[in-house]
Amino acid sequence: MDAVSVVIEQLKQGVPPWVEVKGLLALSDLDKQALNRTPALFVINLAERAAPDVRGSGPALQTVSLTLGVVVVEKAHNREPDLLPLRQEIRRRLFGWAPQGFEALTLDGGQLLNIHKGQVAWIDKFTTEYTEDANHGS
Image (tube, rainbow, N blue to C red; front, side, top):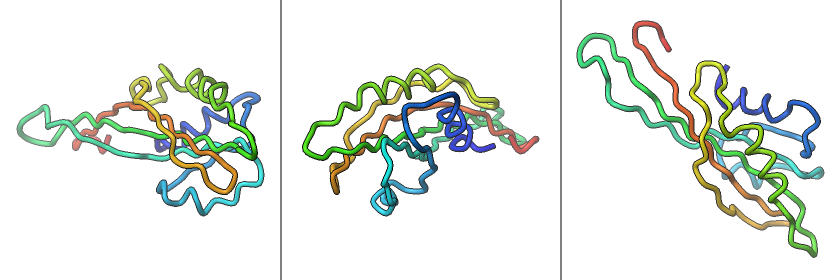
């Protein structure tokens, strides 16, 4: 299972304070989402960076650093939305959690994405690592 899918499943566990969790291919796709129900979360693979091959010869063995984003979208009609409780719950579920095949997720910052059509979008970033082994496909 890919990292985005396992993070989505982790965020759906129990009784979450958000109404839906979906994957997102690109941040530019966020504006195309029809959001009638909020708060909503979107999980996106933001970046991958491969470390140098540790073997030096033969089939490669590399550590890959993966940055995932969790976008929180909430209504902002005539009020300033309080995103902090939602962001804290996302951190509670993801920070330090290690999906199978990945290292534990660490915090990697966050920022306001936009305020548009009566909604505010904020992204929190998390980083993890996994190993790619040319001998075994991963």
